[in-house]
Image 1: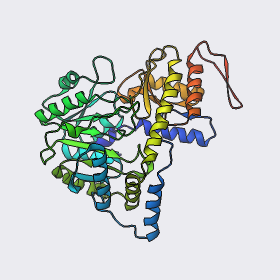
Image 2: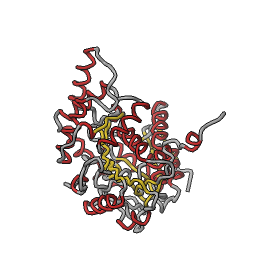
Image 3: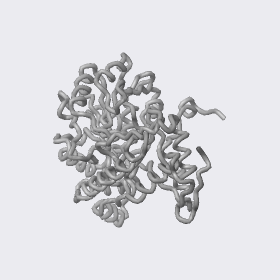
Image 4: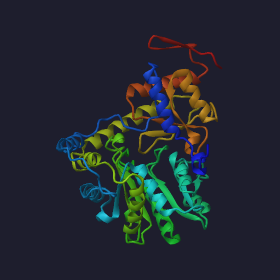
Length: 405
């Protein structure tokens, strides 16, 4: 059988694979705890449900415009004014089937084969694969000081004549760190000077803690005309806990948005009218659910960090936002895939191996589940890793016995 080079080289998403594994184990009745999850447990806002139901009851569910309905674009215009303090026009917006698709069509619209696209490590697992799907070259920028936040020097050292774009994800998946405003300013000004695209992956920008704020890229660009190289990606999945609705968007200059729409038109056409109605309901509706989720996540983070800090030899960096923490377990095993598999096999706790995010020896641990899951999950991890642990552990009526050193 003949398979294309892209088909042969495209790697499976480890996060989606492990999510599938969790669902299979759960269906079998296994007492598995998911500490690797990437979706909030809150229900979708009632305004979203009301809006989608009202439209469904009309029976008029038709094709959507390729770049999104005008009503949805108006909602994004409002969202942009509320969060970025900038008025954009409908032609600056494309609505896609999730933020991931918005990012993908943006890459397809700007990248040629052999172009390089930079992103900072640790990074979201899909960035390098999405670049390869465009025939481009992914370049991870790993901070020299061992932290999760790069210096401008780190980025400059990795820029070449082939560099076409830089992706900034703040708050960052998987570390949860917010990049300082001064760094964002430096990166944007450097990119404008070099004629490099800046892609701001802002999907977590509303889920921040301790009174902190994310930098507003519009504060630092010289203009947002048709020469602008700024692209902002966002969506409803995280802040509104609407992961399954698959509605995201991109903001960019009008020429680029037109090119992205042309590409999307041959891929999926416009996203579902029904799902856009739900997104409109969420964005235009009561926003208390976003703050409630943010508060819950901040509390969950505090509980998780407290539990992890009690583990001997584990190095924890307190996340500023998202619902992840990226934890250094290298004292126990420098092979994060092996360690993740070990924890799943021995104590039925699912974590995400750090190597998939560009840093070995780490595990991404999520705190978007319940406090009970967090407490029990970390207790199981401690029992599995601490040689001083009792020989036996009960999970419900199931007895586990330590048969390893």
